[in-house]
Image (cartoon, rainbow, N blue to C red):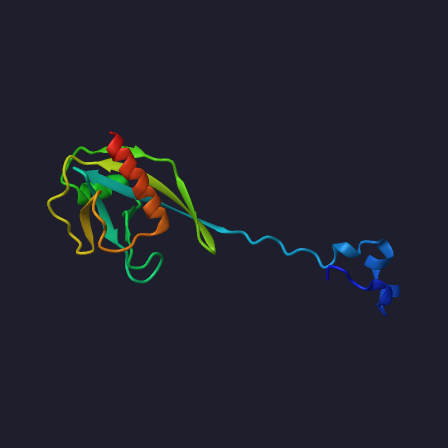
Length: 156
């Protein structure tokens, strides 16, 4: 492919690429695959040195790992999960994480509550101290956000 033996080829008399001197154009390059783009919003809820995390379902992306909740509506999530009526919200810079077959754009939103909610409705969700190790693994982009969150909370 990279160095064809055109002078020895039995069909060179009928070859348009040989006649035109455009041999290096063939075979053409495959068109670049278009990567799929997906996006999500993650709520980074903090209160009194704790962070709210959910354990992801075993099947699917980041199966079984702890993660910030992925939501469609931050206000609705806050109303459902937090005891506080008033919480401070701060959108962070989006974070892109690339998988083998798509790119995921994560919009992190920091939500500050005055105290951890007294109740957690799901068994696969809990408030964890920012200083303690988690009871399981977390995905790389969640870990990156968690490190940024620890720095942000300690500086404020």
